[in-house]
Length: 291
Ligand SMILES: *[C@@H]1O[C@H](CO)[C@@H](O)[C@H](O)[C@H]1NC(C)=O
Ligand SMILES: *[C@@H]1O[C@H](CO)[C@@H](O)[C@H](O)[C@H]1NC(C)=O
Ligand SMILES: *[C@@H]1O[C@H](CO)[C@@H](O)[C@H](O)[C@H]1NC(C)=O
Image (cartoon, rainbow, N blue to C red; front, side):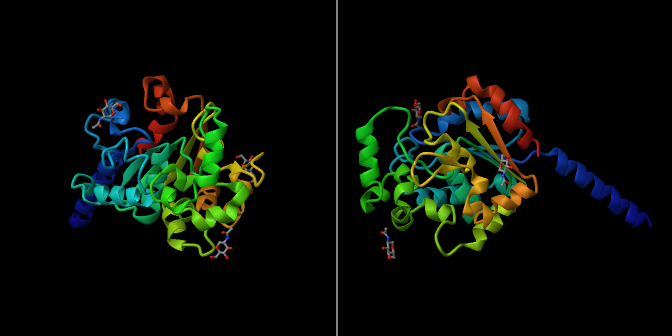
């Protein structure tokens, strides 16, 4: 009898302890930037979650240039290795993960192909989840035309990151055949990889922030897995796509279990990790970091 009481005390202590201990937070920055752009976020987490929370602000290669001229899947592999080899992370059963802009795709690749250590809550800020089809805010038709013509050339695919998530819905078959990254990440190829779906389904929650004033991700709704139709005119909501109906990614499963959260923000794309958008961080991201 005494033994059982002792066991119960230990168990209760363990449960309380594990609930009070916030998971480490891992951050991945966006394109044309380095990890220092996320320094504010590290500060906010120490201020608002706890001074002792372990925060890993991941850098890949040299940051700035390597975030533009690289293979996306190589970056996913690098990210996976950095997390797996991290001694501090290995002390915890799970982590919380934040991906910003292009970093949303690298982190999602981590969840889908590695997830070791496993992710508890996954948050993305204006991530081009369904890709991009159009250049950012500048009205440069020549650049748009150039990209439409050249994005799927092998050399371009192998060297420029955003070409690997350029999705030409007017030539969807070409995209499926030639893009070396996004069709796989989104399980769009004919042969589906069941492991991807399982990994996404294992998330405690997946939170998608879309900026209503996004001038970078085109279309901005890509942050919610919505995208242009085959005329590049209207946006099709994710839950009206075959990908959702057949649940290629496990998002429908999360949705039906109230674990998929869609939020609109008024934070400009480039402002997420700055004081201008600290309130947005507090409202939508912070609650997910408290486990
Ligand atoms: C990161 O970017 C900042 C701002 O653009 C720059 O000042 C800094 O030198 C960069 N750091 C590295 C390690 O490249
Ligand atoms: C895509 O690849 C398949 C198989 O290799 C081929 O039959 C088809 O013509 C290609 N389609 C386009 C649009 O390139
Ligand atoms: C799709 O999502 C929207 C917004 O959350 C919701 O209003 C609508 O009912 C959903 N449609 C389907 C078919 O589930």
